Length: 428
Ligand code: KE4
Image 1 (cartoon, helix red, strand yellow):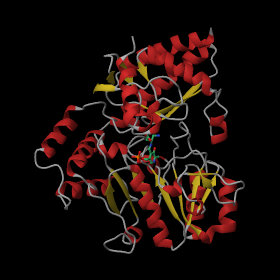
Image 2 (tube, helix red, strand yellow):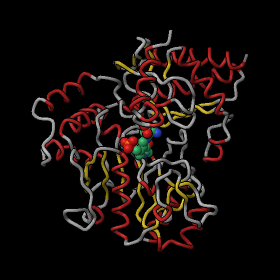
Image 3 (cartoon, protein in one colour):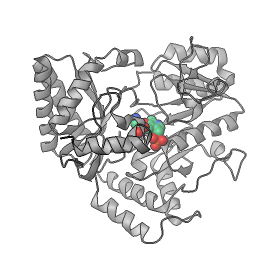
Image 4 (cartoon, rainbow, N blue to C red):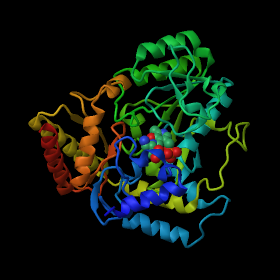
């Protein structure tokens, strides 16, 4: 008898492309039927068949407090009871803006939007408007949302412009985007030496999480900062995923690098749709209605969504929050490393703050090529074995995982035990 997940997936595919509202949810990378969740509470989610899972996706990062945090839910209910949206300024979004300015020294001014894609798309347009230049630099394997200029794969050579990575993106749109190798300092220096005065901005996941978790090599972020400063290009840290996930100071605080603009999302919405872009006031002043760079949004700064984000930011600012989250994530990673070693499986794990990566290769990758060199098929088998054990990982070998404050040591230990069992099965 087919499960309720199967039934719902069959029905969804009749009216929603691929049965999902975002492609990664469709399990195409790992195979099988996506789980339709009916409820989340703390560290757990329940699917349409009533099976529960320890959740390490957390809606792809936002749920740093866990599912249905009572304080966040109450903040949403209280805000909603006063009206869902006004399309006019509210004090709630002022409080959020002041909070972000207070939390991140690099942010002097900020604009709220409704998604990470809106944040990065707007930041790139702003950088182009500010510099009067068109060329955008990104890194292969980094994902910054689905704006046309970002759906670009590397050109045939370092200095050749990218080609569209999606149908529907005009070549002349991607033709302003250069794609470099993440962590390749020589490429950055060479590009700027040859084209520095043409570059409007560099956008980077300062800690990458969309090709699994990859940390910046020593000197990589510094090279971006120095070259952008020298050539008048705007350095954009896309912290949509890492913002208030790796620490209260974000990646820019961990590595003490000051970007010119920062994009945020996920955690600042606490599970509701909030994105933001902000940074140097002299750049942000170019935004309409002040300046010539246009951007807008019906629900930008929505007070109900912002209420969820503000309560989340308030709770993660509690003393010791990130020390505890980082330690718990490290407990998971250390347990997985030990289990893989004991089972003789060529796999490892690594973490930064409350996010982690599991890699089917001997060592954590430092580049896109190394990520591609991992055993994707082994990950896919592991993913499904863990699903059977009641552990829900990101349904792709090329995604990071997330621990929440609701995950207990017992949850972590149960997850490690499940991983050990799955590694043993893989070794058979
Ligand atoms: P959204 O438009 O999905 O809110 O944000 C886009 C985005 C921008 N920048 C970074 C660094 C991001 O990680 C994202 C979105 N992350 C993916 C997870 N890999 C969202 C999941 C999905 O696409 O469904």
